[in-house]
Length: 475
Image (cartoon, rainbow, N blue to C red; front, side, top):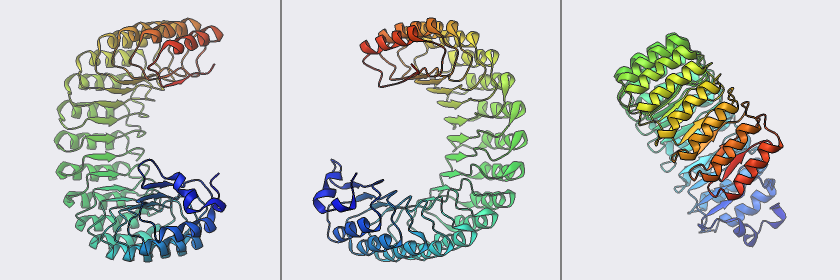
């Protein structure tokens, strides 16, 4: 343990990385006393550029000392103070330092018990600071008043490109303020608004901002209560927005109606390359409309559709889209009640699709029949690098087929077969494949039904296999 008692220049230099300018002190728990000692060193240090002080029980006194050091330090460009207890007074001190510091480019203040008062101080600093490009304020209790102040600062700030507001409890009022800022801000390219209790009203104002904003390329609205109405508004914005390349809608409670609206937007949008629609219960109808959009969309390369209850019918529709779409390289279809029929349809698509490199089919109802079909496709596929089949119903027959495929497949680097029904016979077959396969670096076989025979076979295979760097199995 790197205790504060050892926090001398000679001691902390041992923590500096080989690059010579990065100091990692996270999780040392040296508290305010350690922070004060470190601060006294940083006032004159000319080597450290990046410093990580996360999870160190630093309170307001330690933050004050660090802040004073930052006022005179001329080399640090990146500082992490996450998971401490600096509170409002500590945030005030850091904010004062940021008013004069012209070197720091990135600062992380997540999970620090910062409330409105501290947010207001940071906002005032951002009005005059011309150096910071990235600030992380996630997991603080900033609330709508605090975010209103920061939003006002963002209207005039011309430096920040990345801001993280994950779970800072802003609600619709805070979302409205952020939206107004985004209408005029021309530098922010990435914003995280996850888990903020944003409803329809907030979604509507953000949508209006996205219609005119020409800077943002990535926005995350996951885990909000946007619903169908809010999704409709954002979908309309996406029809005209020409900047966004990545948008996350994970669990925004849209259902098939919202999915339909987003699908219509995807038919005309030419900039979005990554979209996450996981956990939205879009069902078969939503899957069908998304599939139709994917047939004509020429931009999307990654799409997340897991946890949507699309079933075999929805999987069939997506499969037909994949036959025509040559752009998607990553697709997530986990936890969708897809059985053998749906798996076989996906496999038929993979026989003609030459773009996909990662496919997730975990937590479905795929049995031996589906696994055998997948195995046949993998024998000739030279594109797929990763496939997840964990938590299905694959037994020995399916495992045997996959093993035969792995003997000849030279592309797959990662495969997940955990939580299936593979017994000793299947494990032995996989072990034999691993003796000759030189491509796989990561394989998961945890929570299956094999015993000592299968475990011993895999252990023997790992003695001769020089490619696997990570293996997970319960034995």
